[in-house]
Length: 235
Image (cartoon, rainbow, N blue to C red; front, side, top):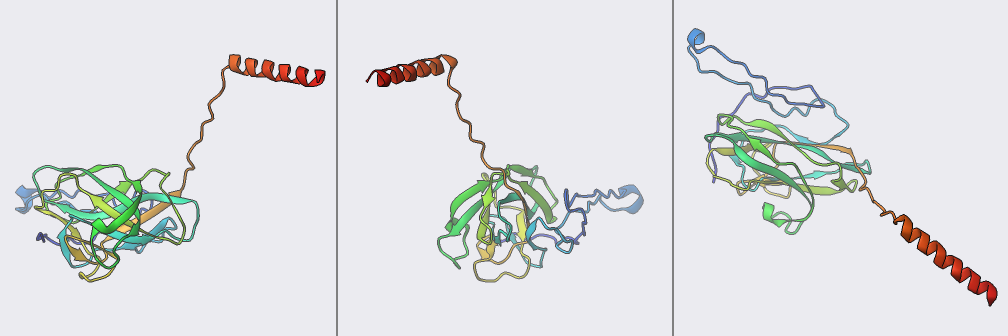
């Protein structure tokens, strides 16, 4: 179901670490005769960033955020993990949409079918977050991943947005261009590259803990080995 949304003016952001902080600009209704407005964060792909492996800015087509998904290439550097994925969303409901998170998959069982349900091989899950009421203005939101979500270099992966309690009303997202066909991504039962950004980080190898034997067990083992050694000498 396609939702109609207002198109917001893109705000360039140059901070490459905490990037895209929303700057509230409150206008006095008494002085200006206008309701308070907010400048919402957007994606800026023009600033160089060695940690970013995929980026697409907001285009002119919108749809509902249900079944949002996007493909990306992990880049040439080995031993890297997903750090942050930025997704452009708009929410106009009363209150926030809670428990939203992203999943990363390694494969697409039905290429060119343009549906998030075809993604297979779950390799990582982001922390969940709330999407506040943006007054239907499209806004860039960050989803963070643990450093253990390691990916193979030069490999295509897929991101999927999961909304545990979708209401299907006043919840939208943006394409980077007009809707099209193919295996790039999609949302709301339409195909097309979504507005997004994917950042990588150094992967953390899982810590392997070796249980320590109690001192008494080690002493018994040492005694047993000693007895075996004495018997060998007698033989």
